[in-house]
Length: 187
Image (cartoon, rainbow, N blue to C red; front, top):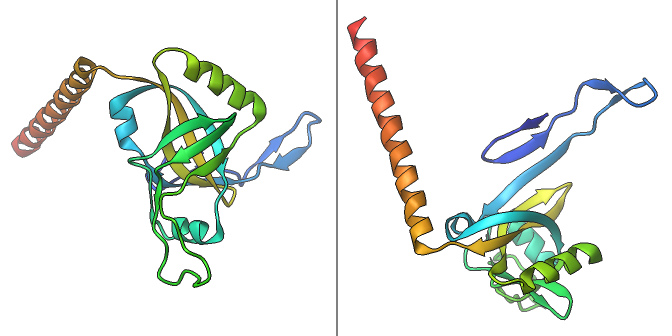
């Protein structure tokens, strides 16, 4: 059972469930905490497939990410020499960062995926119109993970349609709220 929350998603445990042999076992709890989302990716692209990749980070970067000092709004994902790289992600160093290193806030960071996944992504990206975009940076089992979306770019009219649809939903919500207020006052 998955619990949706803006701060984090949790796969709940706490109850016993029979396994294949009929013995009741406790299901482990897996906590997925979202660090930063790339909302612009959903506005600019149709996300067709998602992949979860680990990131090759330095120690100061992990500490800064834990402190919430990361941004992937302007970032993108590239395939270079059969490796997947996160380019343009901004991680601001903490003031207490070590003095013997020089932090590079927007360096290229390697994404860690299985070879089959990389080969599949390379094949799809070579097709016309597909691109890789970072969707979400989150913690999973204490490790920093990146959701990569295999996406196709939206045309301007598609973006306008999405805006019109959202505006229509907002107007409907406002009308429902107004109707409920009027109904409550009559009783």
